[in-house]
Length: 203
View (cartoon, rainbow, N blue to C red):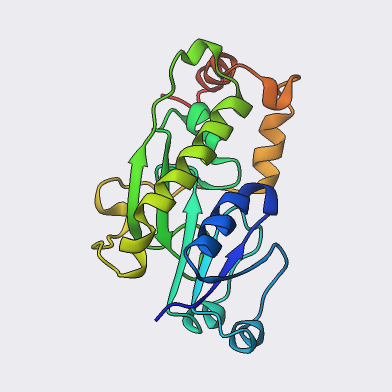
């Protein structure tokens, strides 16, 4: 039985999820700091929900819970790593949202449920507007599927079941790419796509 749920990640990203968990009468714990197996045991954590969490969660921590999942703003296996929304336009892979089980690596666990996302009027969109739209859709997607997730109603599958893609983007290369855009997160998506094509990120 799930009682205590730990939400890992920044508050600004997870406030709606925390409120939802509490309204569903679960006890919500939350932090964006590193957690240990002892923290999990001490607080009797049954479930972990990671969203925007910057640290690798150890196997010891994962195995100390009944369910440990990650909420990710990409259509995995595409977009593993940092700034997945940026890389979706640079590399030309589908935009989307994914909920997957945690494992020993970043963003490689079995998919529970995922969805492709299309943006309206892409010529008007920026990195920030598309990022915010993905976060909003991910929150709704999680809330809609929460009960099925805790009851394990989904049949999880390996990420490479449909696509053979194993590239991971780290923080250094992601921040290096961002330096090419003077307007940073206000950069138009059309400019990002153009940059990707020009630099042969997209075939």
